[in-house]
Image (cartoon, rainbow over all chains, first blue to last red; front, side, top):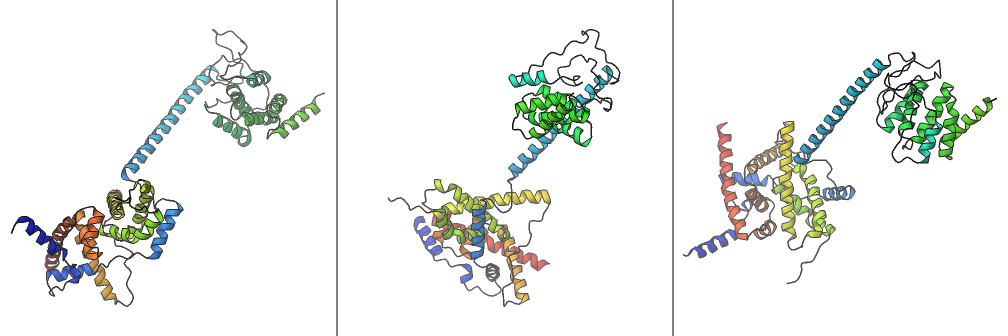
Length: 273
Length: 179
């Protein structure tokens, strides 16, 4: 018999093949044991409830009920978390280190805040502070810079300028401490708010807010910073409260803190002889 | 030659959910995970339906199911490596049938456990063909269509799968006898 015919016959025989469980194996034979094992697993019939549950899950969120990320995704996620963590810790460490160095330098240059601070020999004494030029400056910026009388510049605020003796505004103010270097707007305003409301340190808050107004005169949090500056100045009995309030009302006539600004102005007018 | 009729996702889901569930088990997916896997299969179906030519729905679905089971196996291995979980966890879906005595239920469960162990030792292709034919009751033509292979290949695989299965049964019997 030729090979194709043999193959055809074999196929025909196989096509007549019955399922093992339909056969009648001899009891105790290997075949019987295999059939017994196969009959333990019945044809799977999924229940309508199961079907409905899967459909509901598909319609609800389109995602599997339990998150099972692929190994590669998991590994990538893990690596990303590690990288971000390392970057954060490194930045935090670097900031702390730089801050510590700056504070040390400030402490060396001005060890006693209460004592009159003299400018370095090379710098001309009592040089009037130049207005800080900020990118995208507009007339509001100029107005803020012009209207708000400058306090002593912050120790760690770049660019560094020679420290000059600042007028002592409030004798009750706590001893000035070296301020942390804060490079982003929200942190600076939040730190000022904590200093003012939690630590009851209006002088510290005022310094931070002055710093903010100088660095970000058109910042995203200028409204809040001005409101806090009014509050800090009021707490210290600082006459600049009126200036801050006027600036606030001019820039934010319908601002959220308008009422506080108006109260400050009214109070200042009442006390003005 | 006329273009094959297109089916919506709903139609495919209604018509093929039971089959997909069966295929998943035949491909070696644990019964406890079958529902989640069916969901994943139909997620892929919904996403890829626009690109499907609707010529061989069974074959297309079977390929998706095969890939999902393979991916599931890899994830399972990865998880077992991480958590050192034993892979032979018992399935919670094996509830006793009403009317069966506890001894019969226990015996059936034990047989099924042995069967799963033996099937797990077979190659993926042979096991799928074997289970689809012997347990799930699909014909050779149906299996050929869903696997995208000639019918002759199905019979060949089945022939070898049976030989392998009985060899495994014999091996099991010897090990049980030696205990």
